[in-house]
Amino acid sequence: MTDLKTDEIRARVHEILAEQAMIDPASVTDESTPQELGIDSMGLVEAIFAIEEGFDITVPFNANAPEQSDFDISTVGAIVHAVERLVAAQK
Amino acid sequence: MSRRVVITGAGTVNALGRDVPSTLAAMRAGRCGIDTLQMRDADRLAIRIGAQVGGYDEADHFNRQEIALFDRYTQFAILAAREALEQAGLTFAGEAAARAGVILGTSGGGLTTQDDNYRAVYEEGKNRVHPFVVPRLMNNAAAAHLSMEWNLKGPSFTVATACASSNHAIGQAFQFVRAGLSDVMITGGSEAMLCFGGVKAWEGLRVMSGDTCRPFCATRSGMVQGEGAGIFVLESLDHARARGAEILAEVAGVGMTSDAADIVMPSREGAERAMESALRDARLAPEEVGYINAHGTGTAANDKIESAAIAHVFGRHADALAISSTKSMHGHCIGATGAIELLACIMALRDGVIAPTVNWRERDPECALDVVPNEAREARVTACLSNAFAFGGMNAVLALRAA
Image (cartoon, rainbow over all chains, first blue to last red; front, side):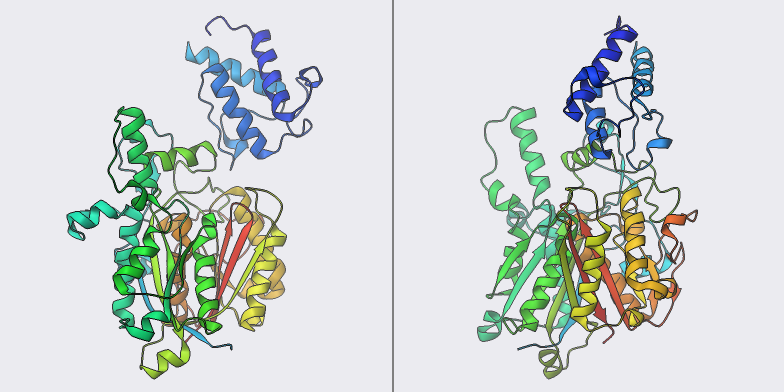
């Protein structure tokens, strides 16, 4: 886990979100928002659980106040960046 | 046959008190029962707060044989029922027993028993459990023990609709008495979900607050779990009058609806229909309602949608209404919550005191109603509603009138 590069993290986050949205991973871009992919608030909670399991990290996220959580979910790219930071912090 | 139905006994155990007087005193004082959770493995929890019944020792109330059979949720139900039945002054024999039953709400049933025994077999590797695990954990155990303890021989069962369980149960018991199927019904709900597995499951949903419960506040951060029981004696008005019983309040109507939409997200339309249906059933004009005990969980979604629903149902009168969420004090007691919240309704109708929404700090424009922030208020209330909007989109609203 310690040698995860940004591209690998990106690819895995895209896969997790694609699986959640039941779409092809190729149609997920960093610019997409979860809403555009068809992921609603509970879908997001489920995707974050998959991210925690997949990367063995703990994501600080409260569905009541997503904007106040220390985990940016505004776009796919923001999620990739936030995961990267958590993976790095875990080393 | 349609009879008027009244409440002649009330009992409770919850984080605010071990009986009705101490609970109402805490609500009047605006005391918050939320504190650090005390339980095994609490250090492995991400959410470490809750409204527990603190300092509770089952051995103070029950003997060895009883403890072997009574899960914590059953114990709470029995203690609350004892208070309610003592107040009502009823005993049941012969035809009176056959005409009385018990309908309780619970969501988790004997969850603590399940948690303890799963731990024994999975974590500790034991290959044997106590012989009474099944009768202890079953969802109808509390109702069954109430029927046995007080010789209630009519219809008895348990209702499980998550956070609306108690309101559905009370609504059902009300209809039994109103329709003449029973003369007396014991009803309410009980929940003891504050065990490691119970809290861990809720954590997963990411709707729990890490600090406290602030319903309708702009800074609200989610729900906080509580535990306990609320039990009531319902009987027909004629039955109560004939025996000279003191009447605490009248159950005037009930409204039940289903959103048929989403398993967790509430619906404004479903909530509105439930309130409208309760008003219609109770033959209440919206203007007659002075208080609503809100579902008010403190989640982003519920409080916004409930506020909009109240504003829509009550129109201009919504601004003249007092609305409070006592979950800010006793926590969200899940399947027992409607029953414990009914105590706040009785206090409003009987004592003219409206329980506050505590921990409130800042107005949310999306919850722009009078939420009785932080301090109890004196007011003359002749009719009120108690809302419960559950996961599963199952809603039950009770309408009450002053005695």
